[in-house]
Amino acid sequence: MEARQGMTPQSEDDSREYLVRFCLENFRDKTFEKYIRQTLAGDFAFNLANSLKSANFMPSELTAENGAKRLLLGEFSGTIEISNPDYCGCDIEECNFCRDYPDTPETILMNVPVDWTTIKDIYRKIVDYYSKIKE
Image (cartoon, rainbow, N blue to C red):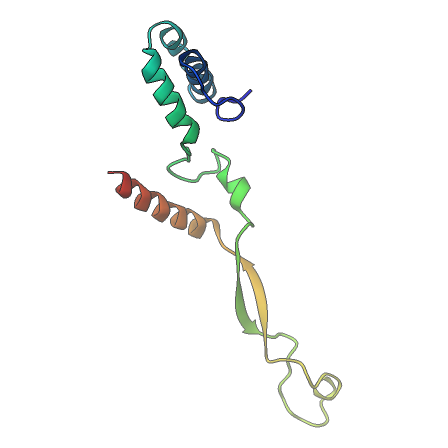
């Protein structure tokens, strides 16, 4: 069971258990477990566990290593207007294309994905903004 889902710490013992699970899921070093279970003050554990329960932890940057690239690439796109490659535009009455397809537009709208660098730049701007609010 994940620490952030499921239980909401209701008591000091629940809080200690929540903190242990949270740390086991998020940190490699396991030396904290005995300290949390036996030494950490119960009221502090309770307040900390409930704060962590409502916190939203996000990486400081997006990378392929933390899975963000796989998650976000292709999720965002924009529409641009480009010249229609099928548009002849010669306006010559003898032109078969102009005669057969008189309503062909000169430009068309094309959906293009937002590139990875732009996604990272946007995310970096958001992280910078919210980190300044906390200070």
